[in-house]
Length: 223
Image (tube, rainbow, N blue to C red; front, side, top):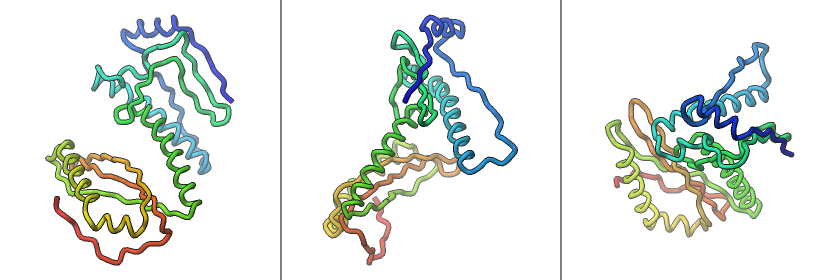
């Protein structure tokens, strides 16, 4: 069940005018207890901290990309009233009546929502496949990189390597042997001061075979 708190648009507009710009974000912080919280309690506090951090980061994205839809996310009123909806089951709150950008790459708030929905969908797909006697294999594709290399050039190399891999006869033989039904891909991009950008691809392979062995040693290929 859901409960809601309504806010009149004129009040929001006054706040926006007073601030000299779009809607701002104000967060309160409460120090953690010194009495030693339980594991479940620590997990709950960590989830709250992560949520607060996402709301703190979102305005910074807007300053870096002022013309993007992410800069307007949760700051532009698109209905007659703005509400805060709270789930009585989960205790989570969210806004209604404000524009959302829906960008999984640039918006920390929308990215968390979309990622959670995809996680649930993926979990359902895995459970259904395993219930039918199949298995799921996690595969990660990575490659060497240097600090001076741009993200664009690394992604181009990775894309070229992926096309080569899936067109190779060895992959086609593996697919035929294990009756691969499909795959789910997820791109992850990290950055470090020592080695710069590090893009890599995670894939879940949905196989018909429950057991499998790698009899031949793998070796790196230069693309």
